[in-house]
Length: 193
Image (cartoon, rainbow, N blue to C red; front, side):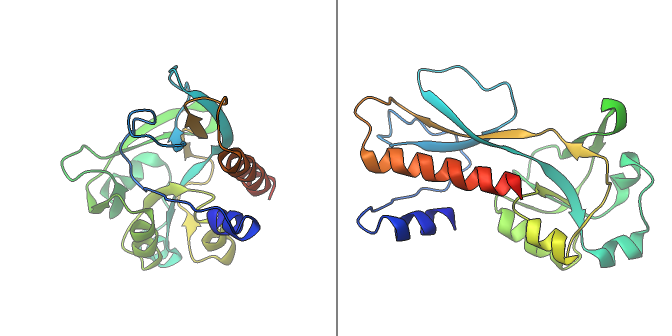
């Protein structure tokens, strides 16, 4: 939506977007910028970094699944629940959660669905297929409507930083600068809601 709004505002600008979870080489691949989401601290590099927002995440499930399984008393109760996860099939799957008084809990789980698609994970969770960790801003409307519910209120994964990286401010195209400013405004508005 942010990109569509930018394109409406700047009808002569053309965007070419590559959506990937791999770490791209901004300079080597000739990219104007890359958007990344990483937990702090952010790595130092030769690139310019502009922080856009802090991303909270939460464990969610369809209310029907919560009703069927019963509300968990704590993180470790989730180890036997049906789950969904982002990543690769061969990876070990775990949720690292922080709760009251900064207590840390690590929950290992065996997901029924593993994918790189947040949209597929969200859709499966909406249908009651399992518990999933997703960014709060991505499922904001589902939480508001009650289509998804937080599984463990008071417990959440570590926050991450949404940021843009680019080679240099010098010689930056005006359209790239305008896009960065637009994204910064849009993410700020999202956080204020």
